[in-house]
Image (cartoon, rainbow, N blue to C red; front, side):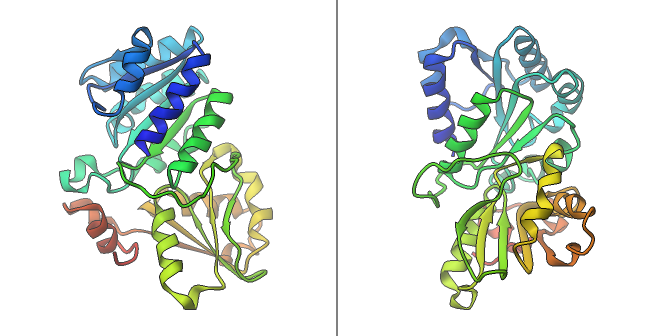
Length: 296
């Protein structure tokens, strides 16, 4: 996902002089393609994420679309005040890029577990969450964000994620993206972020799930709740899957969005991480399984 991100950023920056990349003294081996091609639009803010976000907001206020890049929790929880007051409140075109969503950096422990980030970001009224499930969705999200500059949060995996889509899809905020058609008016899995790969593998290795549909939602946020009920109506059961805690997560967001149609609420089932993973250290697949997101 990281490589797809930087590739799309470089392509866009070739024709858009307002694109800027700011990093918190990391990303090496990934960001050089941008830094070498556009040295005047690349800034290393050092290990000072709050300053990085303030710098990003300042640049955005002058007309730049800034991508502020760091690992997991560091550009989110360490910068919560700056995101809230500087970026979201002023509705500035800053895309917060978090690498290693979920438990991708599980071997580094709780400081690197990004399992509460949706809960933080989705309460910001102007923030659009971009949680792609594979490199193709990364490219789709990047193209949307670049064409629609706004406060946004791009949540990426770490590396090596397979392509589930055969081509770059077209994505819209709040719109479900169909990857597999099951029984009409049957059951569907609805994913956001890296959980797409988990469900895709689950469906392929379990013939008894052949009638299940698969949908993903790469773009969502506070402003896109109103469009959910009509999409829910097409299915008898909707199982949301996320590499995040249930509280404040994607499934909880969908329940809130559906509260206007209480007859639909029983259709929603949530598959998320158990909070016990917060005290665990291990590789991503091990922690996902321990947290309840299917055996690897």
